[in-house]
Length: 179
Image (cartoon, rainbow, N blue to C red; front, side, top):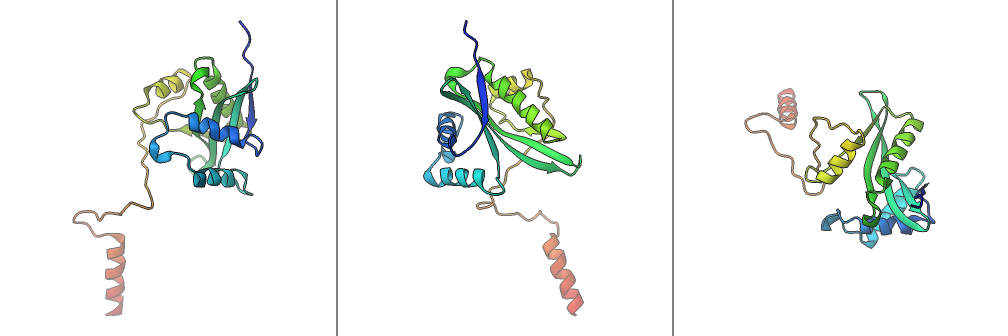
């Protein structure tokens, strides 16, 4: 059997189109995240600006681009250290079960160590059992935390039932000061 040699390289302008092709192959993407020209332009702009919003690394075997990992470095005030967030790891369907996903995770761990991060975080949808099994098999520990998402364009902040909100308190306080 021939040895598989995975080469991992940082996203750059020359391999950006290959990155987009891999994202399009990612069958786990929901229709709402379908890549259109505007999103591709934002990905390009946000990767190569003077303060990039994310980093991505592409895996290649010979001439085939087979995997990617996208990451964000944040900050943990709890640990007072940088926090390494794995946004996505994807391996093309035809190249799964060859150790490529594990190699991408190991690469992310080495990268987090180089950046002197105190913790690595990733989130997996509850219904993605294959991904959960993969990460747990590779030593990732599930924690008892619930992550929430807020769409800033469609969310209306509710008022707690029967309780005064901070805004109500400030209005009442201001009204009392004026009288």
